[in-house]
Image 1 (cartoon, rainbow, N blue to C red):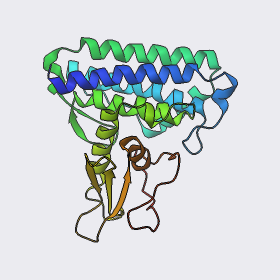
Image 2 (tube, rainbow, N blue to C red; image 1 turned 30 degrees about the vertical axis):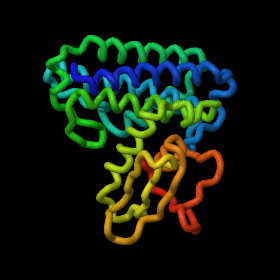
Image 3 (cartoon, rainbow, N blue to C red; image 1 turned 60 degrees about the horizontal axis):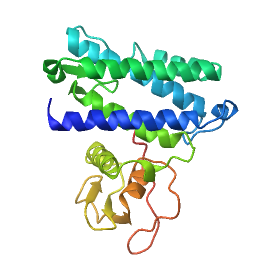
Image 4 (cartoon, rainbow, N blue to C red; image 1 turned 180 degrees about the horizontal axis):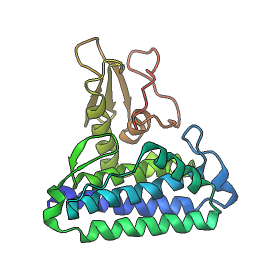
Length: 241
């Protein structure tokens, strides 16, 4: 197993623990309260993360058996399962999350080394090696831990995970002409990320610490104001995921 995959698996395990702890901190009544995601309660977020675990198990099964096993049978199935999960009694929803997380952890721990290079397809139609599943889970658990709208914020996300999220956002939007040209600049000068197609116009430079930049780039509520270099307004970014 290569070092990057080992690191992603470690991040996924840590993020799962943080997500589960965040869910555990919410009262049963609080699960019906709003999350940071428009139109979704905290229960919707929990149901989504549980069903995502099962969807990623499908991809690992595909990698192991060679039999095409999509993440979801259809977009409608995905939506209906999240809605049904969000309506479950709180105890059932919590148990469902833990069981789904355990199923995924077992598959990640036991997938034969030679299967990590097998090709699978994401719900968005991207063809990727099975090793990408680990990163897909990293994104889900860490970002949605913040989305639960508890005390967890991007300041609780490891700095290297925040930087990897920024790498992901920058890659996703590098070629989009509808994306405002923005340069994200770590205030310590260690890293920069360019969003949008370069060369069309001078980028708006936004500086902050790396957790703050990750919060902004992923479209989550930023605690406190962000100011672009030279004044003006902060561009509103399109949805990332």
